[in-house]
Amino acid sequence: MSSSITSFFSSFFPTIHADAPEDKEQVDANTEEAQEEHEEEEEEEPEDVHPTIREECQKSAKCAALTKHFEHCQEKVMEGKGFKGEDCVEELMMHCADDCAAPKLFAKLR
Image (cartoon, rainbow, N blue to C red):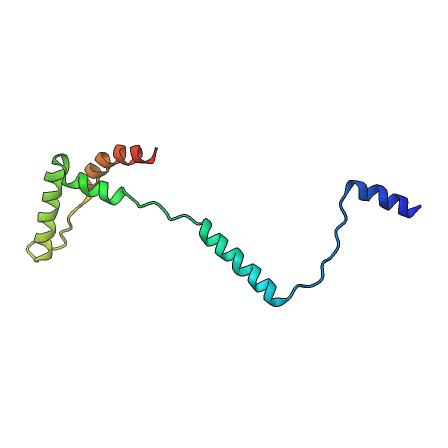
C-alpha cells in the first residue's frame, strides 16, 4: 500500500536523485565557463554627460558673468589678496549652471 501512495504522490511531484560527485577539474571548467559568460553579459556603463553639459553651461553667455566673477574671486583668495577668512561662494554660479544643464540632461535620458 505504501508503494501506491508513493506512486500517487510521485505523479504530482518529480523525483530527484542525487548525482555522483563530479571531478574537480570538471567543476573548475564549469565555473570558468560561467564566469566568462557573466563577463560577456555585462555591458559597459554609458558615459556620464552631466559634467560636460554643466561645463558648457558655465561657459554659456547666461552664466559666463557669474563664472568669471567666481574665478576672479578664487584667484584673489589664492594669491592671498582677499580679506581674512574670505571664501568665494560658488552657489550662484552653480545654480545658474544647474538651471541651464537640467533640461539638456533630462532630454538625453529619454
